[in-house]
Length: 235
Length: 235
Image 1 (cartoon, each protein chain N blue to C red):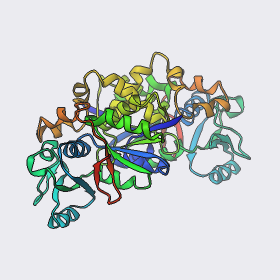
Image 2: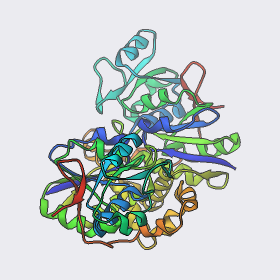
Image 3: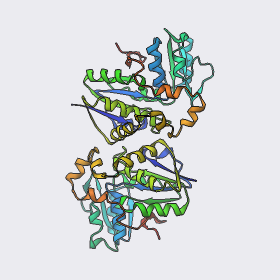
Image 4: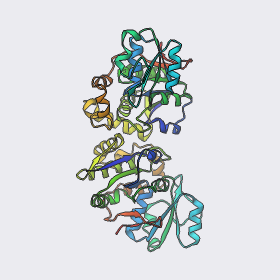
């Protein structure tokens, strides 16, 4: 039986062997929610990058520049980090160069894996089906918040692990914590998360994003990193 | 109101300001369970050190050498890492130099705190009372397993946080995860932990230690690091 494991923050990723595995990166608030929503609605590709300057460079080559620093819009950028921006008409058919504090870092740290997916609650079941068909070991890496575990990402890790329980065996104490948390939280994710440390800050920046990012199975799409290091829909 | 927070592994301790706080180090399997039991029963002091060689050097000065590497007894040592060894008659009145893979490392990383306690389920309530009287912010640092979070330590973090809820406000997503896990587990800690990743290995090494380490409030003692960097009973 294949295994599935949750890594609570990208700062702990060095404890995991990535070769031979599929890594699922999640940054629920909000990078991977933006990515899944945008690609599902018609964005052509999203290139995750570390530096703001790299985004601005790619902007000159025709990309839209998107992302945040410390949950703030960046000067000169086209898109912020709200999933709704990624679903606007002007984004359709475009490529986006995206920088985020946590999500992009996590994707870049996962490069040794056989395959990298980006996922969020919005494509939970589609991602689970895809992984079951692949028949490989899975590591879910939570982007977290400035290197610390973030409850929303851990809950997604638990949700995906539980969705895979008929094909993948759970490994590790962190995975156990994640599934236990999701089992408690699943009846009302938003209420559960209202106790999370940085939710107050995020609320100030736009109330509708948070409940949106917690909606399950809005899209029947799978997002993967292609050979050009761009996130695209998996065929 | 003062705050209380759980850090899931010593590898994430750099995210926390330690100055002005009391750090509670826990390594339930088994360093802090050994330390609390030994001191409660009459061991004079326990000096936590990183290296095996340092233990052997202190042994020449009259200390007993105790501890483990990869959960194995070390050649030339007097004590292994079973709490029962620390409660034997030959340990009474003695000083012990102790090395452990995780617990000692964690204590050494906590040096900037105002005060460092070592605690385990065996002195949960005594530790909580002491902390309430001190009126300072508290950080519980889980030793974990080779840098990864260990479920038993996280559960203790949750238990201590809940025991302090009338005097200390909970901070951080990790703390929330810990208290949620303990709330689920508390009716039967052993069964809950039997699903933990490394319990199988620990079982092989001595079955009676594990249930012992999960017993709550065996001792009404508090253990703190003194100015000579030795763990002693707090007066």
